[in-house]
Length: 132
Image (tube, rainbow, N blue to C red; front, side):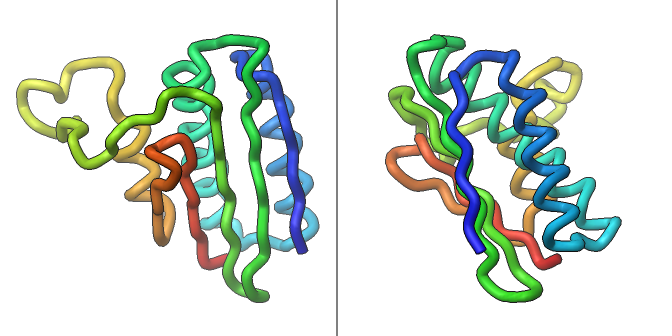
């Protein structure tokens, strides 16, 4: 099973992402403990795509692709139309000098909530894998 949604790269699109994830949860019967991880990790990826990738430009699209790899494994890909970034050079948000800063935790959360995270297309796309 695959599903795809294209949204304008603006903050107001977040509500549609939540509706999309609710639909997927109902169709795939995610375990309750996995559902929260999916919602938070995908929302973080979408926020990063909107704010950092597309820079809130309504003319740029944000694409979310859902794939059910097996009865027990899914992948959600989030792709923006920004310039990309290198996730390997991001600072550790848990370091003492950054722990009190309000931002910079999106990639950290994705890596800790998903079972596997892959960045592709120069950081414009993130694939989040979950065992459901």
